[in-house]
Image (cartoon, rainbow, N blue to C red; front, side, top):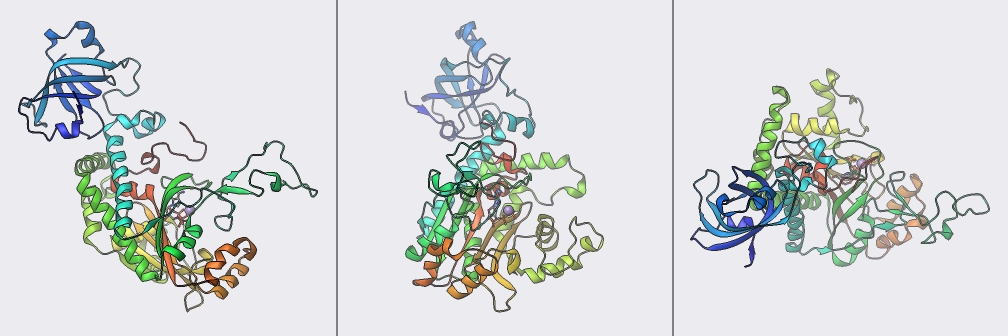
Length: 477
Ligand code: ATP
Ligand code: MN
């Protein structure tokens, strides 16, 4: 008989039909009640067995973590919390699980402990919910752009383009690193390396994305991104997934509108399609928050926070206005920031971003028009000569979730800026071609996928929203 998924069984009307179900045992009580889970939903299916009809030998093997198959009749459940249950006619052990040795005991484990057994944490309620939500969000991203007529482009993962993110790149080489070939000056001779030049893992697909946008008008990438940044924070990974739309004939306003619409679309999609998982995660967060002192608890539950993001337009503020707000804030005057805000031109730290979002505006904020010195060379220069058409979107609890800009489409301005900051034009000749042939105002942004998942799941550490996190000194599994 065909196996049914537990998610579907739980919404089926019980009419004494015979069904087969397979999954892993979460708990087994009183030699009678199996809580079975197959990952299709957070909810377990109760399988009731008549121990008089099941051999002692089999009963002993129904242990937490074991894979089992049950065939039986679907009946209304008398127990609370479920509408149906299976009255088993036969039960079969597919894969044993030694209860003594199984690391996941049916009790509450800390997230830190579960990170160490990331190969098994998929089987917990929390991570089941997190990764189903992650899956939905990824699907929603593709659905959104597809509906908008964007082309999905695969930009390279290995690249020789080192104009961006200098110092944060992972090198890719085939050399025996203890003994690489040298040139006559004693430098490593990359001409002899696999690609005939120095290469690294991509820190962003943007520059290549721009090339495609100059033909298809609207494109997006969704792929892995690598940064060798030594920041051991709860919001940085060395390997993360980034979504990067790039749009021709598009200015900063259009760019902001697109980012806002997209974020609201995918959050709404998850709320509608992962209601139970998000409700579970919302409760989980409330429990967690109870451990904190009253004044540190968030005013909204996860569900309220997500709904709030859908109901309110993101606040649009210039960098200059933000610096004023921060400088005049009591937080700054009472020296509660680690980095005090004194002058125009400083880069905003995560603490400042979160202050603006969580304390001042109390909603998502889009910060625009940053000083050109703290932003990338390709951002469009504003008339004031000091700022560029950049936009960062800041979210509560996260800080920066999106970084984007209108790009500098004027060849001369771009070349001058590159010279100013020492980027050799020869290396980016292919990029400059976009400005030579059919250049036009265009814009795009990068959304860190894990930061989005963090926000929607209410988890607090980015290591808990990617299956196998890569961070400094950690690359397990
Ligand atoms: P941050 O200041 O938080 O380090 P950034 O300015 O380096 O971010 P961008 O280069 O603009 O970020 O990258 C675009 C987006 O990618 C960011 O808005 C963020 O959502 C995400 N992102 C950047 N670095 C990381 C990382 N190390 N791990 C996870 N996500 C990241
Ligand atoms: Mn960074």
